[in-house]
Length: 358
Image 1 (cartoon, rainbow, N blue to C red):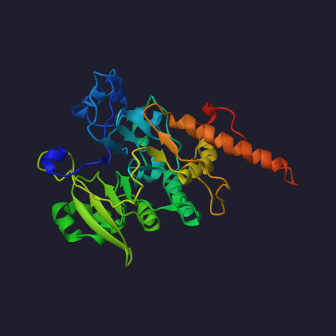
Image 2 (tube, rainbow, N blue to C red):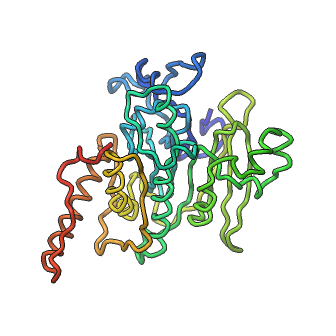
Image 3 (cartoon, rainbow, N blue to C red):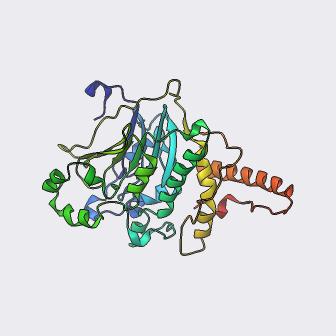
């Protein structure tokens, strides 16, 4: 479908806005919320076989989760990572740099009742299999904190986001496009639009803060374009794609200009996103034993004096372990510094990765 020869374009990345369905085996079907008639293996399992016999995605494929996923697989890769050679999951929320492009993502769809709930662990029941893919405000707050850190940082890591991927639309985005045409095609969207409930009510403000060049979504099974002007020289192009069915507008092309010399083939986790994960980690740890997950007030949080280097990710990288190791190193450094402080206070050091990896 996206062959360079077919379209006459050089394709560097394939981006998917959710409902990827990374089903490895029949057991994974129990973790996917779909009607029985849609429970099917698909062909993802053909990409994870033994080396030499498995298929290889022809382009580096980067995706966020939707509401029809093998949620157990995404839970196991909460922080993101390669789930197959050349196929990368952005995590429940995440930011990466690849080929000179900065890409951020937010997985799932919005349901208010689960916005502060801890994530359920597999195996799921009829209720938790849906809660598993609902967006937590915690993830939105992490991405907002990334924007705050970018504004504060004097480092080159403060560069803006080029492409934002979500499954849900930002609620309110229809006002920036041809809403009348959308309602002629999908008239039953009208009441939700009037109530501000067509999409995620938290992500329009995130769009205004992060100001990505492009914001791409899916979920509502229709194509829609919008243009959000932030300043005279800064705009976000919004693009929603239809379902992957013959005759539908489910594919489009984006050309992103990248800084000279920034086209590294390596996929990396930028230092400021690692800093966000460090700050956000205690809330995730607390949620394991509480009934609520929220980031709390981080308005006065300062960036570490010494930022880590970018983590280069490959198919053998366990991001959870890498991030745990990084946080431990930073907190131990903080302990050493605190021993030299007059008040003698020390930061808490996480000793075991199992304490907080969900």
